[in-house]
Image 1: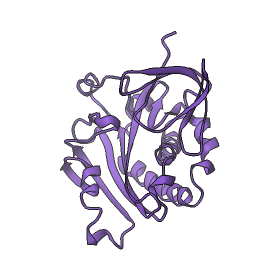
Image 2: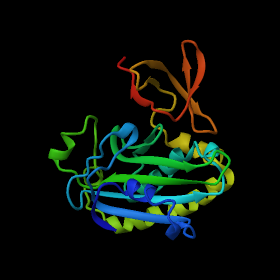
Image 3: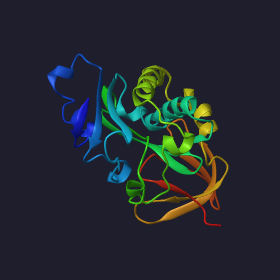
Length: 246
């Protein structure tokens, strides 16, 4: 546990090949404040001051290779929904590929970074950030709708209690994921997806976009859209999702 660190993901990634971790398949790093915490596409994670968030990373070693881990971030989303619903209510959902929403506002996020061989072994560093009590000064700097557990529930939650519940679920889910893959969890993931069956626009980093109706996800975690040009799948690459304006 760190009071202040640049990034818990960086901390684990910079040490994944050290001998001290060779016999430790699971390593956890948590921090009160991350100075350089980040999300997908290197977006900054805004955490604020002590007690505002729960941020941590877990390093997990897989016997399988990177090629079969493409649905991993979606599986981690299931962990967060299970746990946060148990402390909050059922209005917590997923937004493909790795945002956690309360109704339509972001409550938590996930960043998965993989290292290793295509055919194995491989490791994943899984970063998780959950908003507990964000002041307006922090929310005003975030360019999307955000919320926190205090706003969602009207209660101050014990971070250690939620942290412990997450670690138990992470161990169980990651163990099953390594055995069975994402297909084992797919139906549950779809049941949590906020945009299942809805008209959306997928926005790509090159500013291009595609519109369609969310139809499904594949066993590799890619999302399926029914577009004007037929049904197409899009991978877990740098894609963001927004509801269509119309």
